Image (cartoon, rainbow, N blue to C red; front, top):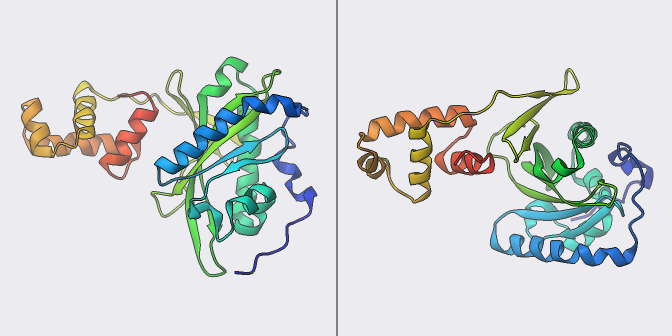
Length: 260
């Protein structure tokens, strides 16, 4: 596969224009980043997701996993070396505009937070990547800060990439793990709006916990003294509340939000 040339360095400037200052973290401080790279690599080896680490100090990628989903035919070293310039090779122009707006809006949100909360918020969004000239994938991208600079700036961020569970790009969502608050971004209004708090009933939480154990609807019903159709009814309500397509996705979302 023939790859396009790396775009001019000025094209990646918008990805960093929202940063309040240069961090200028000395090379010797990168010993703090070594465990993060090791854990990212271990996570990549133990899951089917693509993993990479963004280094906002050096404005590149510190680690890129060998999972082929995100690489689009490149090697991990090639993608790591290109950093943000890689996006310009594989992301269609319309999605690139969306990606840059999400990046700017996300940083705006993070830098309005107290420093102590910045490691507890994750942002989820979808965008397309071009695998070949004729084939694109919609991927789901989850970004979570890992290390802050001494001044509280986001230094390293972990990115987890998987195939999007929906055929069209979903909401851009920030989740606060300290309180399960969620904020959705409006492209029309260019601002974040807090979503109503998600509340699961005790019965719904029980069904999710038993589902984690791999029990069928019949077995869950026996454990809770209800019939299988009632279990299905509660699961349907959970899917609607969590915007989940199946029980596996519902359990993952509920666990991420601290609901179970």
